[in-house]
Length: 126
Image 1 (cartoon, one colour):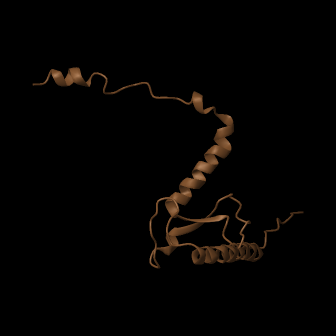
Image 2 (image 1 turned 90 degrees about the vertical axis):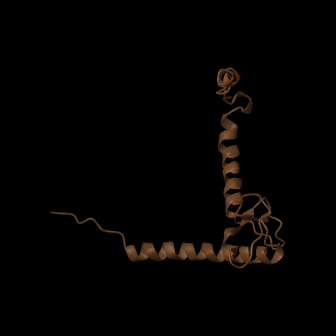
Image 3 (image 1 turned 180 degrees about the vertical axis):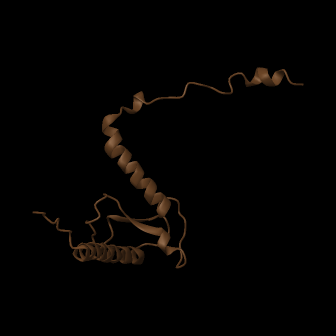
């Protein structure tokens, strides 16, 4: 007797993924639209200005890193360009995970100085 392995219903899985993505897009459009109406189209970190042509590069950052907290007054949002937004999340992840593991005072410091003998090397060439 052979037992057939039942394959998951791909169409149902695709439907679930599509619905989840649609819900996320609607949520993002909702607070993104509000933030774009509340704030000038300028990155809050590097002060880069945006217009309709490059507005997709301006993102909404949640100051407390909770994407579900979206007060209508915009108090948890700031507009950041893609680069500053990525930088902010990288710094947050570093402090969140690495900060607890490493002591900042014991971090490795470079001791080699490649230019230490440069003066004497240049002094020989005339």
